Length: 91
Length: 453
Image 1 (cartoon, rainbow over the protein chains, first blue to last red):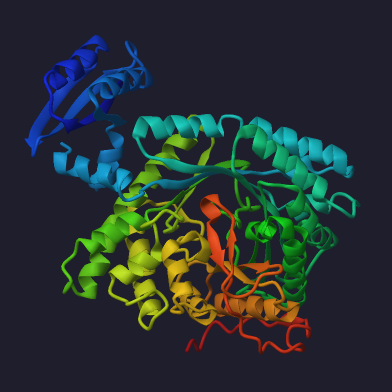
Image 2 (cartoon, rainbow over the protein chains, first blue to last red; image 1 turned 60 degrees about the vertical axis):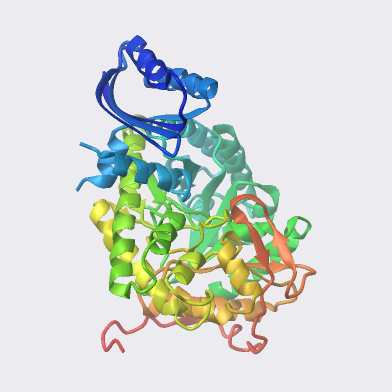
């Protein structure tokens, strides 16, 4: 099952954030559809649209792996199903 | 394509403005559990609830994780227990409440509503025994909520039931006096009760519902307040109504999504989304704060009823665009103990019982979570219930009373319940109820529905 999701990363900028997050996604067979990243006042902010292949890695498993990266690198990483944003912001 | 701004807005609403789904409530019919033997019936009720709601909490938690939306409460509503009480001759039907309490604990829900009766036109034998069992039932249980409907627009007000409920409130306060009269926080008296309300303490599963159903109650006073706080100070009320509508739409869509997913995953019908702004004791998650953000000096001051009416109407208009399944109570709640802004307003002298009563005529749902002095007379409590019923019956809306007589306490003291029930300042009550009006009894006739001025 392919599940569209939104991944958001927020925290202090440091070396290797994009590599760590995209590495975890590749390992889980989650495809990056779009990526936007900015740094404002030293705060790293990245949003990604990804498609999670739940036959390869479940949503919960991927969330766990990303949370581990978040803990290690002191980042706030959230992976949410894309429906939430579509429901809230589109008529 | 979802824009980064939209993603940030959603995340901010959740992480900083307390946006959440207040409750996913599973409605369960217990009709098939009726039995003349109360112990057998209690066992059937326990088995039915634990079997049907076994997956409710795990599924809701799974949705929380996947969608990143907190679901604060998972609850259950059941068939009004008076309907089951009619099947048995047992005088005390509280064994059904204790069975429900054990079942609620077993499946991990925090409250279960439905120890209830509908007596707006008259009481049956089962209704009478249920009402008499309420004080004991609420004293013996932690999670069971009771409610009694004593009035409807079509039937008028059952004034005998009003007086009996005033006595029941007082008896429940005394039965749980050692725990800050917490039994009364789980007891609500209604006019025009709805049968698909997901919120406690008044949730029941009505007779017009399917066997199992998922109802969702949204929340989000914090999100609405944040939007108003970001508006220019000279924004007019048209602009404010528009901003509330747009925020309400977004909040409701979250509720709609959660309701659809929960119903699908549990394999039961989706019922309704209740468009209520329900405050919590968390700072900022307050309906009073919204009224003050609209420019009223302090909640309870002149302008409060108008501001609340505008808020309530805008929430419904935005919400009605967000879901085709509007139901339940759908309006702003004003429970005093659960709203830090309300507590502040009471303690500063800005908000009185009389103003709260006026506010209930333009919002959902009634005089809610209000502590009154422990020596408040039964006649006074009955008069307050009758007044609130009159507002509901005449205006064709739901109203309710959830009063907590604070045994041994006086005006200015506080009752702390903890958790979502918060902390209630004991409020001053008008002492001029007299003794005769409440004791007259009889049926207050249904109001004329034309010539409406």
